Length: 315
Image (cartoon, rainbow, N blue to C red; front, side, top):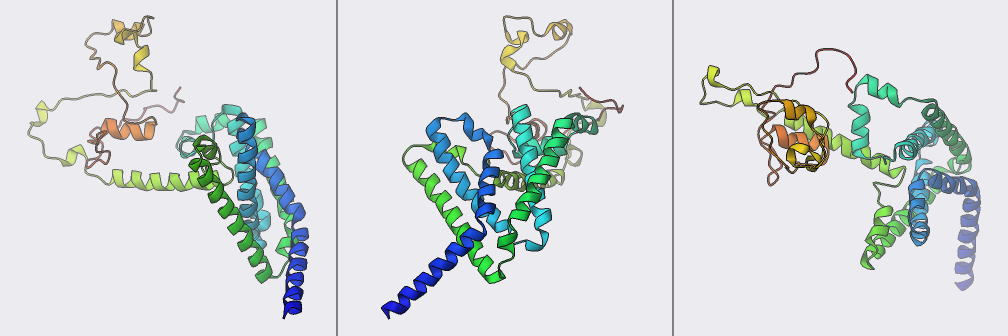
């Protein structure tokens, strides 16, 4: 009985070593890509860099191994993932803007002029570089992809379980010992390529919320006690946000509103708190009956939006 168990364990150990050797180059290359696409971690303290590096390496090893499940589409899936990661890293390095839901909405909801302004030789080279890195990763995954499906599935399950388990254990432990800031550095919303999936998922949810807002009744659907001729016409001119505390109209020492100061009939509401820090959410508080206490509106926008009448780029 003992000899049979020993033989079985030896066979399993030998098979495991063989499979690890089959995917060793792929996993080493995946570790390299993890650091290439997550350079933000190097801005932290030395001890944070070491801990966060270990956490996200284990996380991404499981994710990249999972992608080998799509063996017939590897030369599409891996380049696509690497292109997204490379583009996200480009924007982080160039504009110091990490990939979030907000940055995706900025790109997808802006006008053609602003989109083309982002295009540059550096961005194009970055995207091409990401595609080449992805092709190489797909090639290095060949040994894993050529394994029998059942064996490959077992490796994927083991790698994913180890990856997710170690990530959860590490982040929970960091929070438990008072290292919440370190745990936040390894947040799924920051680590590429997981952060890309999280951002797209959040963008989809926000779009669904926007569809619900558009379906709400508007001011025109609500019965008014005023006669048509008595209804006031109010024009909102909404531009870029500005800090109210830096307005000379609000007592700021420098003259920062010289033109507004010359206008007559201006009603200044003083320093007010915004409904939110992003345009998309703050407009809900400005143009609907939502309040800071009850952020879910029951009525849609109470104004008619008049877009610019020309096609010139807005600056």
